[in-house]
Image (cartoon, rainbow, N blue to C red; front, top):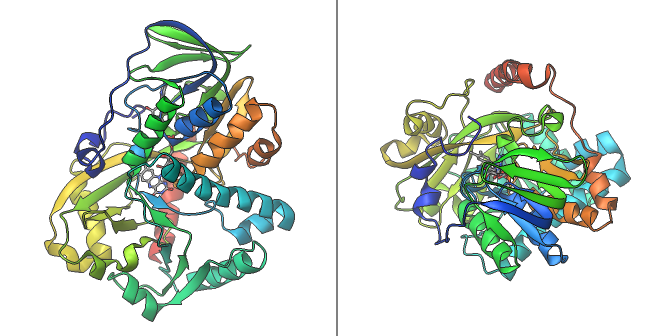
Length: 427
Ligand SMILES: Cc1cc2nc3c(=O)[nH]c(=O)nc-3n(C[C@H](O)[C@H](O)[C@H](O)COP(=O)(O)OP(=O)(O)OC[C@H]3O[C@@H](n4cnc5c(N)ncnc54)[C@H](O)[C@@H]3O)c2cc1C
């Protein structure tokens, strides 16, 4: 499960509606450059764009096709901030540090929207908000506290708690106990966003190579990235492989865990606005989260469900539909047109793992919140390469702990952990 060829990407709604994008060549022979980027998802593309804009020469090596990792398969939900809320950040880091971390999260949102506007990326972007549905009555307690902390300590007055009666008017689901609406949220077409970034990177002079899997990344002095057919020598490198890192750099692999997640898209619905109002992005507060939104052509794009083995379900559409019907029983008659899966990387703390080993920088482990975050990750990595590491250090200090048991044991332990949390969801 380590490369991005499987999990039905070819059958995804995103591939079916992808903007035209000319393929890039395979790396043949040796090249010298200032910066080599390994991985062509949001992280690699943002890092490449930022480095090129700072005047570095940049080569990007992608194992498969650009945007075909998690970046081209995800739910498309733009959720501002981190997987840890403001109140949790304050409890962990204190008010001042938490504010700095929070502001970097907000900057990620602004940078993402700026990129989309600046490069005129046609990716169906919507900025009407993100709604988290309260699966349990006690979720409303942390939601109220979070909205208050955001307004008072983070100077972010854009989130509010909705009573169950108002939630019912926003999403025609089974009953929830209320919700948390963040007006800064939204959604987009993830693959077209990635392809648009790649086009912008090309325009900025980045040399893109596809079907060029790096099999060795040597970071002792400078970086040498070797593929089967060539090598790139660079002053700096960026590992941007996320859940697909495999054993390319074992020193950092122990802090992330790849987990498969599945998404389906229905046929276009006759009144999409009656299913989700205001074109919101919506998820629920379960540990094994369900997330959904409408596509530009009125399909319900639904992700979620639990699965504790790395092998994909034999029938992803049926698997996804079973979960969809638990949330939207009224959609029993809706046809499922597309079904696919992807690998997401999570960390123990649910905060990302950003740092460097020698001259090789890395950013990964966004824990399911990686549509917006790569914009700031790519920016701070390029700042550090240019000699200003202050903001890079703030994010590097978030480093999550290693999974117990390291690479060999992390999967079985994760399965146990997920089972425990899934059980708690049901209680
Ligand atoms: C099903 C699913 C749903 C999700 N939903 C959401 C959501 O709604 N909202 C949200 O915020 N986040 C979501 N996420 C998470 C988000 O998609 C990721 O955090 C984000 O896309 C990570 O981007 P990336 O560039 O770091 O990694 P990727 O997009 O995975 O890119 C890594 C790239 O590196 C390449 N690569 C790997 N190894 C090598 C190598 N050796 N040599 C060269 N290239 C290599 C891969 O082929 C791949 O293209 C979801 C993820 C999944 C899988």
